[in-house]
Image (cartoon, rainbow over all chains, first blue to last red; front, side):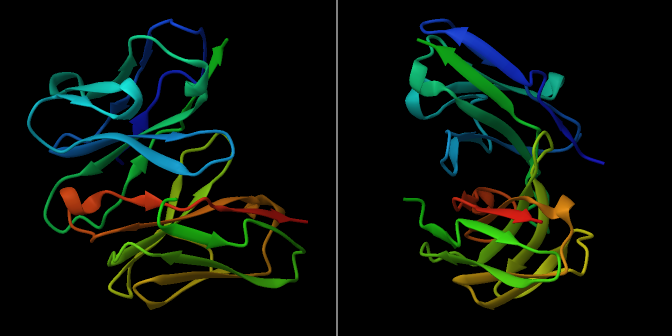
Length: 116
Length: 116
């Protein structure tokens, strides 16, 4: 069965520290990749996505992610975090083949706490 | 404002009650989804509707009954639930269910359900 692994359950950083959240998936074919963010008390929002092309994708609020096909990874990065980045981050994958039923497969999420 | 609204935002019900969750999308999308978000578990896809037809039922117990009267509205009818069904229920929509750009899903704020 396809799965998505997020390596860290809870990450605690100080403001201005650099962030990297790991994400690995198990599907061997072509994939679409997503990072969603859920701020406290708010709905899931799309942070960035990869469908094809440049494997380094830029998202909102200074986030970026790099797709490394050989490692089945799509790690999320930000050079300098802010207190307002405190949220839960979810990596998600959809296999990209004809007839896909839109099944987004989510990881368990990584909670990020940024200390002011 | 995500364009996907859910009501109610909070619901407390007994195991013998019957209640319904409502989702409405204002994005002109053709596909809608129900997810269950439990603590420390990945988001679980429950149901997928495309053009008002159910295309996925992810082994969900029959005490959950979805209804999609049109492409803008989605309901989840609940009856004789169990305490372990307490969770955040999320609705999402997308342009379609085929892979590629149409697969990007937009989420509502969720309904926090507590079953006593």
